[in-house]
Length: 247
Figure 1 (spheres, rainbow, N blue to C red):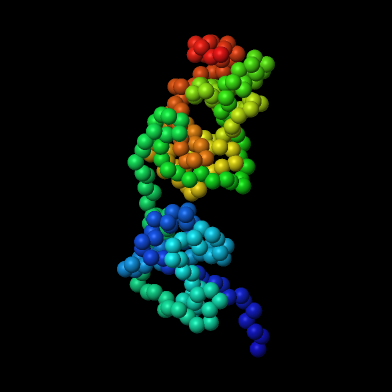
Figure 2 (cartoon, rainbow, N blue to C red; figure 1 turned 135 degrees about the vertical axis):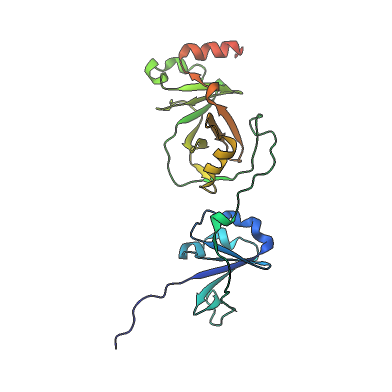
């Protein structure tokens, strides 16, 4: 008789105490994972092989990972089971079970509007940039050197000691570049820690879509209204600096 050569498909379960629920935000966007609650324990299941070894879950407080075999739960590389599989649990996709919450607001990094504590992290995905934030002192002599056609598709405004430009092709000036996601302007090379959070943030802080939320790496944002922007030209740039008595 030929041997069954099919590979065993692993099914992973995990548990953490209910006191660690607030830390589950790090895996909230793993939509394949399901969650259930049993008294003082939170159960999770449905991890892929990659997720089962990812640091996001192993950093959870008092996290225990199991492999399900024939109705029994085994710790990693264990020959003897630790527990029986739990039955009668109500399983829910983790992204639906965990609600997004927002802390109280105060003055933000740029000095106006609101602040929320959102984590921004480096991303390996390359995105086309659409906006630029430059120090006036670094560029005030450079705008006049651009041909008119390069300025025509750009809008701009002043933000403190900086000029903010939005439009493509982006101007070749020194400064910090941004890409756009769901009405947010994120620093080039960065993204929200939880990628699906961008829609929720837009609904809460930019519901009317009448501008942009520009984020920095610390998780603070500046609200830029469309009405704040004006077409860029050499004359508008010079007149604006003159009206501000820029030296």
